[in-house]
Image (cartoon, rainbow, N blue to C red; front, side, top):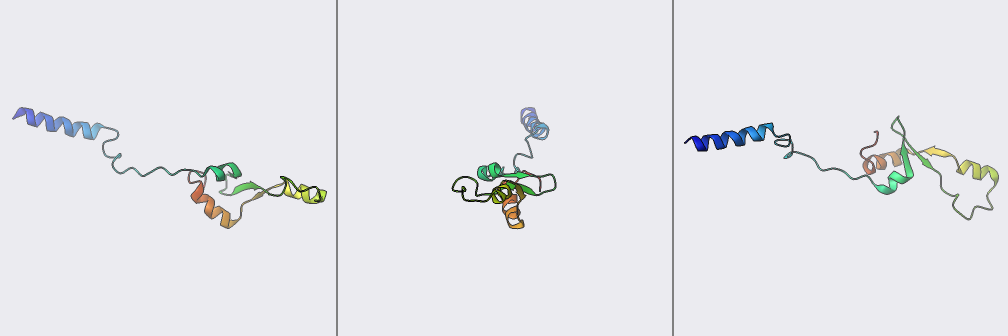
Length: 94
């Protein structure tokens, strides 16, 4: 009689004192950050994302100096891009 009582009591105590006792059953899955988005976009402190402009890799010798300077600047992502980036990079500022 005492043996069954102590076994159930120790099981009950171990479940309540265990750090993973209750929370491990209801834990959500971790989301993965999209590695391509992580390399191309930088989150700012205000919830926006900075990105570099395209067109400077090659075949740009015919571009004017003004155009090359404009393309070398960093710009903010558009609202449509921000929507997709919130899903692609879930653990950045939102």
